[in-house]
Image 1 (tube, rainbow over the protein chains, first blue to last red):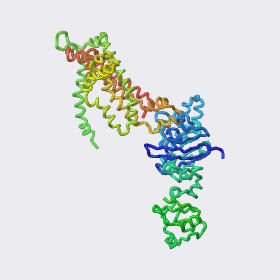
Image 2 (image 1 turned 30 degrees about the horizontal axis):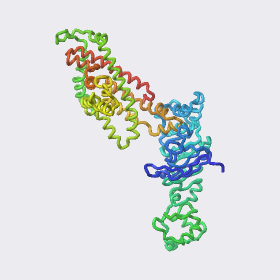
Image 3 (image 1 turned 60 degrees about the vertical axis):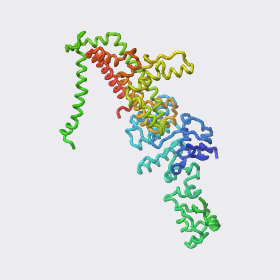
Image 4 (image 1 turned 60 degrees about the horizontal axis):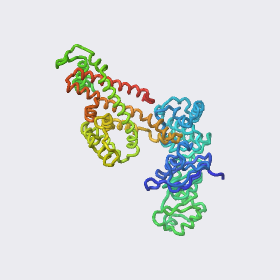
Length: 308
Length: 284
């Protein structure tokens, strides 16, 4: 494999002693659509801000296309950023908003006009040039924000919770439009979301985070079918996997649960234990007494057991 | 719903009060500025005359005073803006839980009236005041800085007195800045300077304009501060009008001075309104 487009190497950040990121290590390939997925407070937004250059990490390195950009200020990074609240400039027209990054790059007037028109066409807002942000709907404002970010032809596009401020109807159409835009432009894209169905349906690769660290990274299929631990299993899937403290082996057997009844777990076990069929997880909070019996059928189930 | 009649009844007290204590004296002021007072007499001659205005515009004493007053107002406005921009920014973005405390400290000159803070400043900048005393005891200067009775002294007092009028509208404007607008600008390639000139300042322009108009008008009509800190050596328009009204007892001429001042205020108001209309985004 060639070296990854984005390489996040042992990045850590804490706010006033409280760690938000603990030595996160992530690689994202060129042209990939990656999703940073996790509950609020897992560090995904912090990581996005560090990627964009608006926040400096305490430790670690960020490489973009092989170049170390850890200390590069945000304005020199060529990274497009779409905020959750869009952050349009209210005193500028749509065209001025989209052209702002080009103006900062001192592009010629003609070139700016062409690129603004192209970017607006890409998001389906041709003809909105002279409007002001306040005259647009939320969905249109988001399109302007995306057009503004892609107009600079970024090396990386960052989307912060792009679907969270939209109504349900709009959400599914924007979801597919974002994917289409990515496929058309080929811009490496990183999206932050707390919605697992969003992440699984849109991204090539899902990076599941918890408490400032990466729990698991892989294709949606991998994450869904082979969750790395109890957290991954409970966070991914719809409805999420039902986890329960595994009863002592005797009780399990009494319930008709035959260890090793099938190499792939019985129908009952599949339904009872976890939605993802190939995994079985014991999430007992007390010291687990399942003992060797569990471990024997754990191997048969090819599952992992997380003692928490 | 209220009938039109009873609505009018509700407005009436306020209208009567305004008409009685503001409109009527104002019209009297306008009329009196066209009257005259024969020398050596306290009786008023009500034959209309433009003599007072002629005197104001031709006598260099008054024209110099007018120019000085406008200059002091402009300088105070500029200094207040220069101080208030970073201060308001700090209050909005950095002060955190000290925000209320800092705002209260900034507001203190407004709530204690003009006299007390001004006398306090006399103690600070006077020949035997804290500032000169400290500098002298540190051996940094041999002779006291002469601030009392100079324009510099008046400027210090005016800036101190009217800084809140600039800070408050700016804090309000900066509070309304869209979150993440600076971050968005930076990610698009704007350095700090461009973030300020293209994003923050244009969006704060209405606040800056409102603050400037308030400070300018307050300074133009300021009376206590220039009187005390100027030690009677630096006449401004307000102290001249006071002289004429209370010491010379020439009310018609004092009225004319007041009308000129009001005309300048009206002009400033119109100018501010015009700029506000020209600002981008003024339509909403």
